[in-house]
Length: 429
Image 1 (cartoon, rainbow, N blue to C red):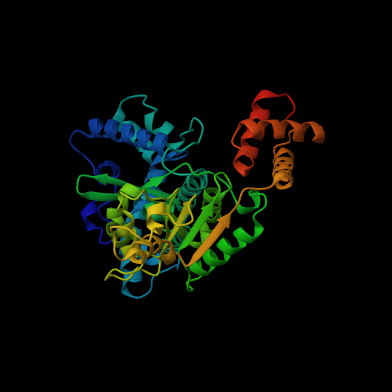
Image 2: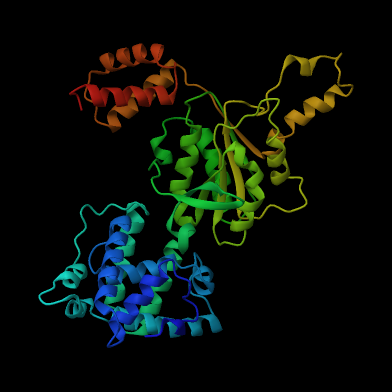
């Protein structure tokens, strides 16, 4: 098969392996066929280990190519479903060719690999060591393997087409479709958005207390994913009260509605325009997340953030919001000299307003205060019950009180650390 016949599914991430395998399976009298076969087997195994693939590795590889290729058709289908018009007609030609490759039996390549070879038979029924993936979370990895099995049994091109389109509608395509969270990597003059694979599986129901705060955050995020008007959010307050955990929980709650999150650090604010340029036309809702945000007087990065949020010539896309957490209410450090009436700065009020103007650009501000003694003890009891810590309540609360006195005071984080300590150092679980 000449893979240059493809119109839509081109420039695959593993194009060379795709081309080599297509030639091995569809062309006769290939020069250096044995050498190519061994090379292909090696590359398939490397991918299997990286992505946690199992079963027929050829089918898994093809499913991966389809799931990870951002093209005119796949990006049109993400979240909303099957594309219409000429694009939907043209893609069927590519699917016909890909289905032909799915129908090839890779065990026939054992004839190339030498007498008594069982290499390709083993790759056709590959058993993964543990099924873990360095590239995807387990849900995506399992769904990808399921897609490979389903496509193997598709009897017609139309059925094949429907299965792939359903996958795009459910998960999207490429890195933004197959991952929840991302970080920003600066490589020379290029800004890349890179997936974060291991995300803490925390949900809003796991956070004890702070019901009003969670409702405020949920209402804003729900409006955002529904395509309604929504505000940038600042979560501020005492350390260890669940501000960052609330943002992670919101991501896990709304991931299947198309919500994605990109973590950006303070020193990367000059990259914000590039980041937004890469995500503005995608059919996802993106939260740009800034954790533990604050600025000293000498740090001017907050000016980049002000311009992006509101005030620059470019309009912030409707699919982008900024969520930030901070221990400071006003983000930019203030000093007593800002309050003096006699100062080198004639327009002292202008100086103060400049420092307060950043927080004013967050339409929703949510305060997380430290729990009182009773609330702290309730958090401890709920967590102990959740993780099945067996200990008399009186003793549990006594030990919790001792712990918080020497480990940071009353906070949800302190309570969680105390329960972790009990789980690792007692037999009562």
